[in-house]
Amino acid sequence: MSPVDFCGLVLEHPIVNGSGTFDAIAARRTFGDALLHAFPFSAFVSKTITLLPRAGNPPPRLWEAQAGLINSIGLPNRGLAGYLEHDLPQLAALPVPLITNVMGSTAGEVAELVEALDARDEVAAIELNVSCPNVKTGLDIGADPVSLAALIRALRPLTSKPLIVKLTPNTADVAVVAAAAEAEGADAVSLINTLRATAFAPGSGGRPWLGGVTGGLSGPAIRTVALAQVAAVARRITLPIVGMGGVTHGTHARDLLAAGATLVAVGTESFRDPAAGTRISRELKSLQIAESASSNIDVYQAQVEVDANSADAG
Amino acid sequence: MRVQAPFGRRRGAVTGVDDVGAYRVVHVADLDGPQPWPGQFYMLATVEGWGAGEDERPFVPRALSFLGAGNGQLSFMFEDVGPGTRRLGALRAGDELWLTGPLGDGFELSLDGRRAVLAGGGVGIPPLSAWASILAAHGVDTTVLLGFRDAVHAAGVTVFGGGGGEVSEGGDAALGDGAARGSGAAPHIGAGSGAAVVSIATDDGSVGHHGLVTELLGSSLDADDHAVVYACGPPAMLEAVRALCAARRVPAQLALEAGMACGFGACFGCVVALRDGSYARVCVDGPVLDAARLDAVPAH
Image 1 (cartoon, rainbow over the protein chains, first blue to last red):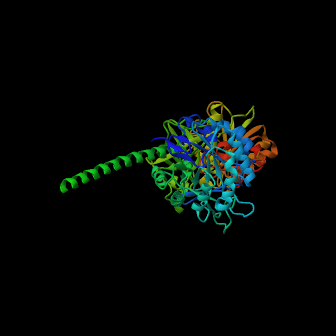
Image 2 (spheres, each protein chain N blue to C red):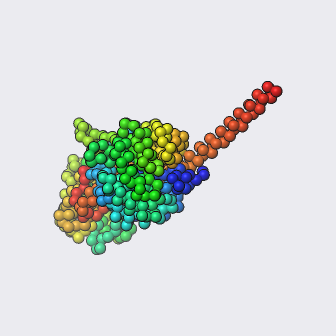
Image 3 (cartoon, rainbow over the protein chains, first blue to last red):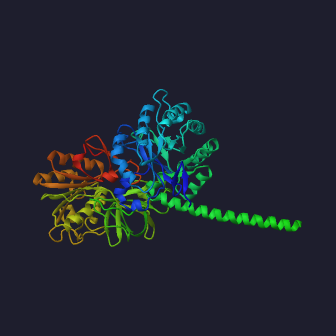
């Protein structure tokens, strides 16, 4: 597979992880250096970092759904200072470029995060999690093109690193939001984030199971939604796209690339198969080789037919 | 104590299946896997038919502590309590599993001259059984206290210390006396200088003490509280063990259970609240935790 250029980063293959779906530090404790020797992704996307530490939501945090998973994790993290001191040195030891995902509840908070990360050479790119409510409107910033445009406008001058906007699917028209990000100078978009969902405790007569009441649905259940949203965004903007949602096999990655994505992120499948990224990139490569071979045969056959027709005509 | 896992999931063929009272024991070939440490667990999913059950579940793999390990084989013991264990329970010899592990931190051998008390019950047997084997190998005398719903579940004790599926010579009659010495069918305990004395409690009184395992634990610690308690079992039992040990200032290591999606720290879904207000991930910070770090064992 030839290397992929993504916002100036040269990546070995198009498969990365979705933010918050792979903790490389915990995985190294579990699997040792074998993780580094066979790292499953061509770039590593960190979980969401916030300015201050967050404990995350009270449990239960998971519900197994039909062909998927609802999570209500609540973005636990050490906060910016803890990330820079504790996590960053360990993530910088990974054999691939590091993309750091950040979220803030105000533009000022996000600006502080972006400025701090801009100063660190270990960080190759910054991804903005905009699935966070605007304190004035109550809408998720990423659901509202006006709020999002204002946020990107404020952040763009603060960093020369690639700025990726992680779009939420929980909006009326994701392509309009993507266009707003593009207009204000974002370098790329990634989608889809999880679909808002909930589940009731069994036999409870409607009491929410999740400690956070609602959560986000991921996994194969959302694959077709992701394909539609990636295709809609690709028709609307020219920025590179990181496509994700329910990818469990190389065929799903190929479909997202065909819909217009430059990279494909694997998320929930890594829970079921820690090395899923490696497997999926291998499956994708086989598909691409097979399809390129068959399209060469098609070209050859078409040429033979043309030649034959010409001969007939002659 | 932790043994690192090979990176990624691997396939293993089922070599045999046993019924032990209310439980199913599945033996899986794992020729190249490392020797795990008691209290560690594996994420398991069937290669075929995972996702084809009730409500199109299971979807994510299931976390199970190993019961026995050795000679290129792992054993797991479980009860049919949901779509995951139902599918695992339908496995037959020759069927294949996906395995990831061993995962998490197991028990710590930190006795400092104290005696070892293993307390638990129900489907909490596997890590205690595996731990009893290690303690015996270290020549540690062990008191084993196990609680069950009824006689059908109490039959699960026959796997204890034997690595899976063997019926003890002593049988239920000896166990019915409330205290049975591990016999020849449990070669890892009772041999050499590490002896194990097993006592049973049942909710319905059909085997052993009529009552809770924590009543046996209370009596045992009344007699001698210079002990470390190692516990695994249903949440309510584990919480009762924790509270009892905390009140007597007896150190305890609890093997916790939690719903997990990944088992290796990726999803942050399996957290338990610690005394200091933070959350620990049961999969990578546990599943064995020092009881002093918890205010309570959560109900689920």
